[in-house]
Each structure stands twice: as C-alpha cells, then as structure tokens.
Image 1 (cartoon, helix red, strand yellow):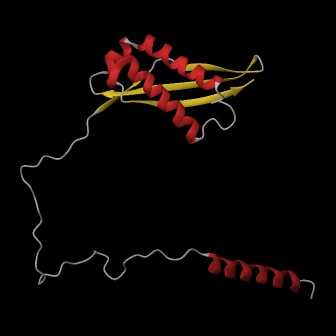
Image 2 (cartoon, helix red, strand yellow; image 1 turned 30 degrees about the horizontal axis):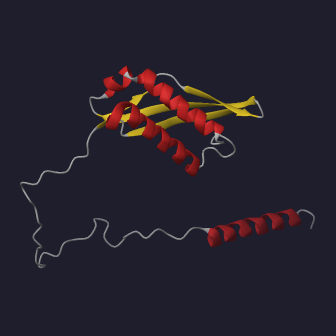
Image 3 (cartoon, one colour; image 1 turned 60 degrees about the vertical axis):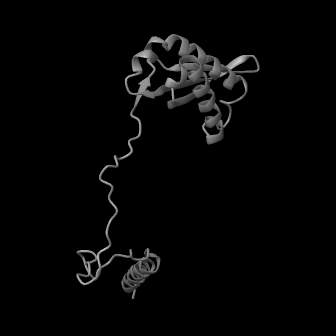
Length: 169
C-alpha cells in the first residue's frame, strides 16, 4: 500500500495537468482548411473590369535623409542647487535627400540652439520622474523641431530622438 500511494498521486497530477492544458488552451485559429489553395474564382461569374489609369503615376513620398549629429548632448539636471542627474541624448535631423551637407555646415549653431531647448526643458522639470512618457517627449520633440526650423529653415522637417538616458547621481 505504501508504494501504491506515490503512483496514484503521480497519475492524479498527470491527469490534472492534461485536463488543465485542455481547458486553458487558446481557441484554434480560423484557418480555411476546406481549400488550402485559397478561394477559387467561379469561371461562370461575370468579370468586373478593374479601373486602371495608364497615365497615372504612382504617388511617391519625398525621400528623406537622416543626419545624425556627431556628438551626444549632455544635459545636467539641477535640483536644490546641485546636479542631481545627467541626461544624455542622441539626435538626428530629417532633411530632404541631398540637404545633409547643409546641416553639417550649421551644426555648431544647431547644437547651441538644441542645448538651450534642452536646458530649458530640464529647468522646467521635463527630465524629472517619468521623463520618457509620451507627453513629456512630445513637448521636447516639438521644441527641438521648432528651433531646428528657425535655425536652418524648413529644410529640417523633423528632429528624431535616437537615444535618451538619465544617469542619477
């Protein structure tokens, strides 16, 4: 009798596991098993004429280059008169194809303008707490895009934040 109890417990555990697996399995996917080749066209059905305009050219979106600024931005976060953390960011600027060189020529002026925006953002508490939530990041992105467009004109269509890290002291 002593050797029979572990076997019974093992069988009950195995049965419970199988039962739970059956009950908790996900519903089967809705796949068409009737015809593995897909839907067949009825040869007797009337064919609908497709409207093809031979002269229409497909609309192409303008091509963009992404100019990655050479160095990262380091922004100190000051609380109670001391640096409580550092925020490190990497940025890229979206420009029309062929305009990358103009961004590199104006990079010092852009970096200065971006740092001013980031310092203001840090002083307003933008890098405190959950600084990566979408509303905080949208405020920063919008301010960076506006200052980029003021600095280099409409050539800068967007500013992308590639990396952002906060190092607390």
